[in-house]
Image (cartoon, rainbow, N blue to C red):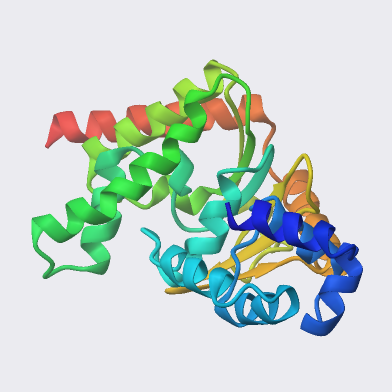
Length: 265
């Protein structure tokens, strides 16, 4: 809604995206991403738009309302961009990516980070995680291509039963040709993304974005040169990973190992 209003006022004033971006010290491409809703409008930009378009506090007031996201602050803008992406590439070094997680796996992740939280708090955190995974309910879009480090398969998050179900869920998505998944095996040794997790997003009507994830932190990048650099990093990881077919065999084998371990227990 804010993006549509921004475009309306910009065009009414006869300004190009580049012209509007100059007083904010941002590119015209960034203004375009605001207009199509790929990027979240920040309060400091909203104040400037109200000054330029003489709209009182219209943009600022609505921007403040939209700041109340169901996602953590460091991930909110990335999650909202993810929902409009047509292509998502993701490298996950330590755990299964959120889009591919089962509810039991996600619950174990949240519980590990918040060991003394009440069940109500954990359940509240689960809601947006489960909602994000609904992106895969669409039979074709977005295209999701994930490279999982073997560590994500071997770390028994939630115990053997939870891991068996989690890996079978990924295998089922792969067998339905809904996602592309590769495993980066331990035998690959050093690789291009030793520094951490990476997500690349492409859109129909906006430039691509890159999101770099860290411990309770994250950064969204839109600079074309930076995004190209991260894209090369992802391509290098993919080149070092197993093929999708070999990855599926490894994932299903690991799932069976966890199921057998649970039976023995």
